Amino acid sequence: MTHSSSAPLASLARIGKTYGDGDTEVVALADADLSINPGEILLIEGPSGSGKTTLISILGLLLKPSRGSVFVGGRDVTALPERALPKIRAETFGFVFQGFNLFPALTALENVALAIRMKGGRHPEHEARRLLAAVGLETRMHHLPANLSGGQKQRVAIARALGGNPPIILGDEPTAALDTKTALGVMDLLRTLATEQGRAVVVVTHDPRLERFADRVARVEDGRVIAIDTLAHAA
Image (cartoon, rainbow, N blue to C red; front, side, top):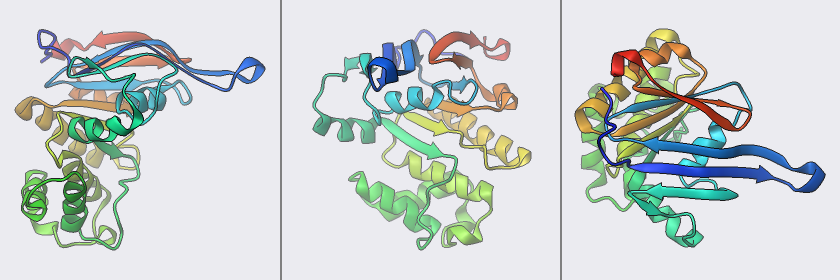
């Protein structure tokens, strides 16, 4: 189900990103437009080096564009001073990465609680327990990452991303290190978060099998968003 009638949670308008100048200039993105709607899963697909990670990094306020505007909650945040961005980023986005990025010496519970504490959340351990239960890890809370499967590690990472209740979850190849069954299980969890909690989920992927979970697919080639398709099952 799509949510095109709702106001976008975030959007990009004519975003460009270049590195270097003159003969050494490299165009990573050119005139990219994208809207992120509540309750949907948006996939960003394209070949390696096409600009997918640059796109999601600019959306998540991890990378400053060379031109264009980034809107969060209807507000243009592009011209804000750098010191203002961490608070907006923490309140708006949760991040899930291919490599899990868990602290190996901390348990699942401690990894999630630490992230909540760093965002200024109240009662971080209680909230971490609730989030880990929500992703099906009630019996694995006190396990170290080394004692968790790949799918369980990614569920910990998703629970961590949900700390602070961000409206948008950004995933950069979150299923790439997982086998097919586990990857589809992670996507099913993200689909539930979008449908039942109204969060937007944006996933960079090379895997077309994930399209069964998505509402829209943005296709990126040579630094350009060449198409944004609404999938038939979501129409």
